[in-house]
Image (cartoon, rainbow, N blue to C red; front, side):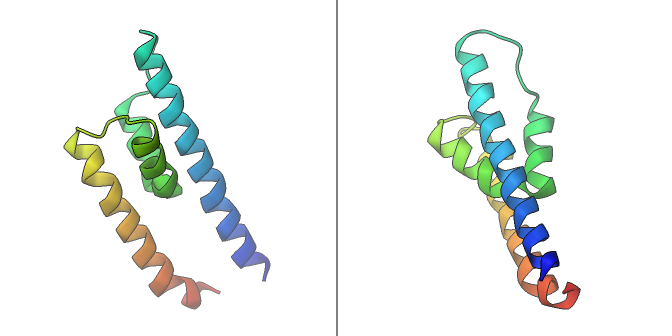
Length: 92
């Protein structure tokens, strides 16, 4: 029981952090400030924040023209979803 809650909490927390990073980076871009690297944004998506990354990308209209993002993040989300669907019941 606690395993399911911990896994869900992990994905939610990482997605919220990723979403916030997209928003912060957009703000920094508009204000000519030091930016969050693309590698960090993609890395956050890879470690479980793809939902937050995709939401942040489209809500903030940030990185939507870069193929690494508009192709990469949905692919990461598909892989994460497939892993959850196929591995989640076996892990718990």
